Image 1 (cartoon, rainbow, N blue to C red):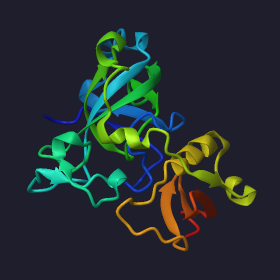
Image 2 (cartoon, rainbow, N blue to C red):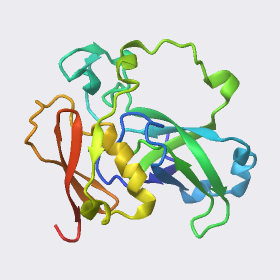
Image 3 (cartoon, helix red, strand yellow):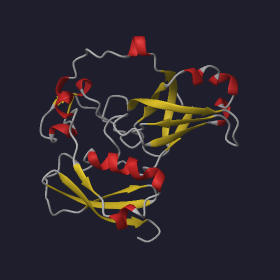
Image 4 (cartoon, rainbow, N blue to C red):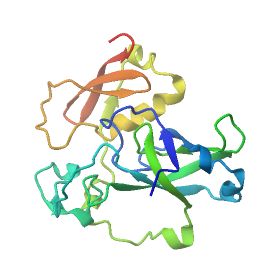
Length: 227
């Protein structure tokens, strides 16, 4: 197989990306296709669907060997689960699957057809292998059991962003940033130090924050050209 496209997002590195698609609906992405797949006929009818599946590669998580068990971050990194009972990036084949909202199909651009999507959980320039429409009657199972993931369905931090820091973030991405921070982007396997300053890159900024008593406070937002 070879990639048919890549996605553009606000995350140049893995740190800070939501752990599942759809958790932060305001996060935008643009799917750009490789030249041989830019035939507009390939997209005929896609605009009739409101969600699509992206099948992609964990391009930054390749390993020579695989393990039968992994330590899911949401379980603190201390509890082992079978790799096929998780969505860990460390798999026999580094394949990811995301359900994203299809905001619009733009057929005629200087890069050929592009797809504008939201609710993304992918790093910038992640390779995409295929795209399929999300079909509600076949793909949605509201009664399904969620296993250990159900423990975290409603988990969110309280987020405090000083006005001076928020003013540095483009208005179009302010809600998305707050949504990312509510999901607690800290590595779950690290010991939680309330005085530790964490940081990740988002929208050409480095966002620095600390977490104390389930409240996340942004302490600085630095333009990457300033750092």
